[in-house]
Length: 272
Image (cartoon, rainbow, N blue to C red; front, side):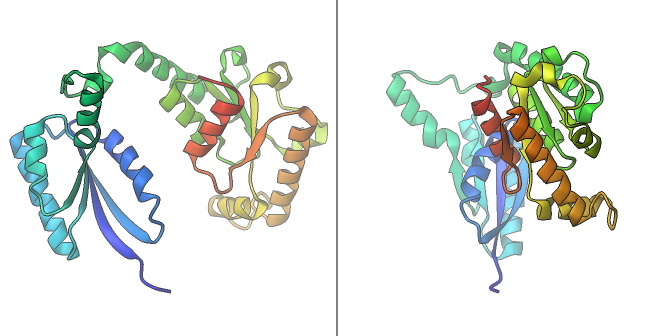
């Protein structure tokens, strides 16, 4: 098997760098046979920081024997110009998209650092914090109180991705997401856990391929009945049977990212 091509990628921003990283990832995932070493440099807000970033980029390029790739979301044009002097392949999202938008709109942009996280979205930020607190308090069936406040309630057997998906929905979209595990006792009773039947319209199910579930559970509790392939096959089959019987929409999370799962949930439940 050929050795995969390796490249170092920098995400540089005057903010958190999360936007640069998210946009960069969407492009890098298209190159399946390249192994990317990813480095984020956030809060680049001075000439000294910019020069330090250039030195770091150049040093990495010398160590790799190949110039790095740099994604930037730097609003300050002077700092961006310094970073783009690095011996690297640089892509600036503001240069790529801002100038064409200015031309289309017929006005100049404000070029304000941190504009995307200003006071205008303070209410959204507050809603996200409340959603995160709610989601943490309703993780893994801890309680079935206040489910009327939930935007979505995820159900699945253990280790299908309920918790990370719930937290992503809360942090990214400000949605209050509860989640409940489906366990053998539920299958024996032939009914949903707790008071979930009252909130059927909010339910969404996750399933997974038994072989994949076996691998995940083996990492958590090796050589246990809980992780055995036979038990995984039983739980997945019973969970899918229950979801079909109860009319719960569901998807297979085996090969899907949290982002893909969350987007499907938003579409299926028509959440905003």
